[in-house]
Amino acid sequence: MKMTTQYSLAELMICAASTAFDNDGEVLATGIGVIPRLAATLSMSTKNPDLMMTDSEAYLLSEPNPIGPRSDDFVQRNETWMGFSRIFDNVWSRKRHAMIGPTQIDQFGQSNISALGSDYDKPKIQMLGVRGLPGNSISHANSFFVPSHNKRVFVANECDVVCSIGYNPERLPKGYQLDEVDIRLVITDICVMDWQGPNHQLRLVSLHPGVSVDEVIEKTGFAIHVEDNTPTTAAPTDEQLAIIAKFDPHNIRAKQLKDNPPGVRAAAVTEDS
Image (tube, rainbow, N blue to C red; front, top):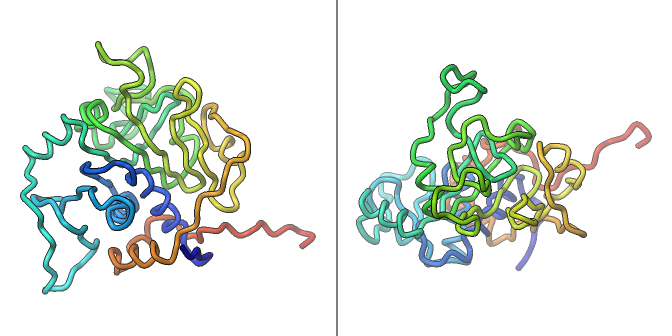
C-alpha cells in the first residue's frame, strides 16, 4: 500500500482511531464526533466490513453515510431497522464499541463528561451530565478520543466526577473483576495509547510524527508505561485518504483541530538555523 506524506493531523488521527474497530467483527460502532465517526467509517470500508453503523436515527446501514450536507438525490443504503430497543440489545450483549471524547481521564481509565470542580452541587463548569455512560461503560467496549493532549484532560487525581467504569478496584461494581473492564485505545493529537501496561496502566503505543516520549510524559498528569523503541504512528495510505474524502466531501475534518495542522510536525526552527 502506498504511503503519503501529504496528510493532516486529523487524517492521521482518523486512520489511527480506525484500528480500534478493525478486529471487532459484527459489532455496532458508535463514533461520537467527526473524527471518531470517520474512523469507524474507514474501518467498515476497509478492514472490518462486518462492522455495523446506523444513520443516527432508525436504520442500520450497508454503507456508512457521508457526513455533512447531501445532495437531494442521495439515497442511503438501509439494511434493516435499528430502533432504540435494538440498540439496547446491542449494548447489553456487549456487541457495541463506542469512541467517546471525555473531558477528564484519570490513571484508572475512569472518565468524566458531567461537571468540573470539587463541589458537585456547585460545579465550576456544568457539562452533559453522566447520561448513559455508567451503564454503557460497564456493558461494552469503549475507546477515547482526545483532540488536545494535556494535564487538564489526563488529570493527576481521580476525575472530578467519575462517569464510567475503570481499572479502579475501589469502585468496581459488586461481582465485577478488573479483567471484565474493556477500555481499548486512546487517540490523542500527539500519540496513541492503550491500557495494556502493567496492572492496566496507561501504555504508550505509538508517537505521531515529530512527537517525543518526553512530550507525552510532560503532558500527562500521571505516570504512563513506556516500552523500548516506541514506533511512529503509521501514515495514512492513499486508499485511506480517498475513502476519508469520499465520506467527508465537505472536508469537515479540517475544522476539528485548531489551525488544521499537518500530520507530520514541522521541525522546530532554532536561532542557529
